Image (tube, rainbow, N blue to C red):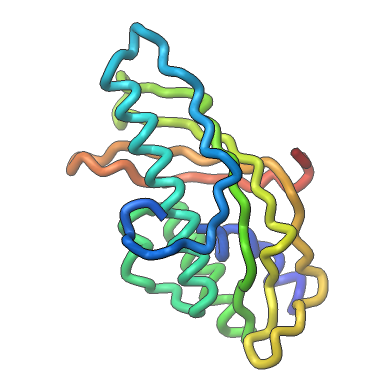
Length: 180
């Protein structure tokens, strides 16, 4: 069972900008590389919007994971498929095994690429996620789920601009074999 929970542990529990509530995410320092002058205002706005979507994704996914709610209403505010489905599946799997995520996730994102000419426009973000204080535990007694220890590692995501103008995180990968 613990191996099954571990498979998606990071994405089920990783998740605030614009929510009006205190987020369980500790931003070590949202770092954004300066926008080249050729990108101008549109590129700077894309970077800001993508980082805000990423921060919101981390916060709301943590909240949903702590509540064991795979259909938390704010997930769709920051996430799109295929990542939305993966996050929901992971939260649901943890819930079925009586587990939740507690603690603090520290984030240090950097925009690594912006493509405003593509369809859809995208922003690539790389993050050094510190999940060492963010634990998968059994909800009943908060015992740590065996084999679910978290690390400090590289994560990458893509934010895409959807036709309605929203920037949503739609793909992501946790590179636990790459410490940072």
